[in-house]
Amino acid sequence: MSQARVEALTGTTPAETHESAAPRADIYGPIHKALRRYFGHVMLATGSVDVHDDAELQATCALVEEMLGVLRGHLRHENDFLHAAVEARAPGSSARTAADHKEHEEAIAALASDVAILRTALPVTRQRLADRLYRHVALFVAENLEHMHVEETAVTQQLWASYSDAELHAIHDALVASLAPAEHEWTLRWMLPSINASERAGMLMGMRAGMPADAFAGVLQAARGLLEPRDWDKLAKALGSATH
Image (cartoon, rainbow, N blue to C red; front, side):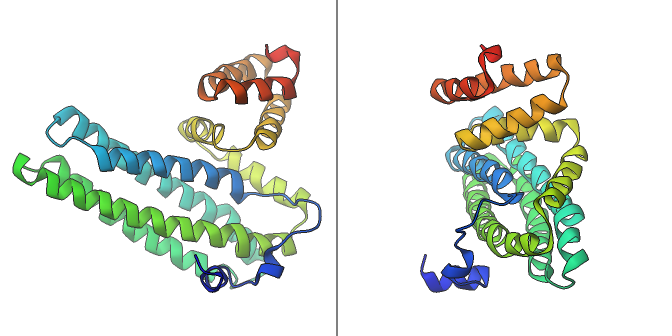
């Protein structure tokens, strides 16, 4: 991607996006890493589906529908917590991302229609419809990747200019507290293997500090099943010998 394209997306120059000071609270980064990994999973499944295998076709349709549900929730949480926070201290500054979200809602509805048509399609039309769904999913993912870049740069800069890290952590904690159990499970499943070792250790240390010991033990058991052995060893070392 050209530098001009990057600047057009973010509305900033490289000097403005470069951070030389101590790292600030990053609300968007970890969840977006999870979404990028998840998008890849859905795209691979959609592109490789065997349309002559009824069970596989229906499972793939269900996976795309699950993705659409995840994105509906993601948009709602960003609107309710992050866009609201930006607007509270810089009115009008979230107009661009709010408009993107409206377009994403329309795209979600269109993809849901594509899936519904494919689910009941005659065998002779399945491949054509599956190929169309795959292309539409790919375009949807591409639009989301650009949108996430804007949020991680321009919107994050606005949040940093408007809020202290303590305030940003409070916003993040309120968002997390609003998640349904299924959303917590999805987040753990896709975020843990997607973030780096230091992010993972920080996330688990925070969870350990705020959870009963037996509940945290369940999280660790899930983490061990999700992570590669090398990543699990790093996490166990960071958390201490009690995880072994």
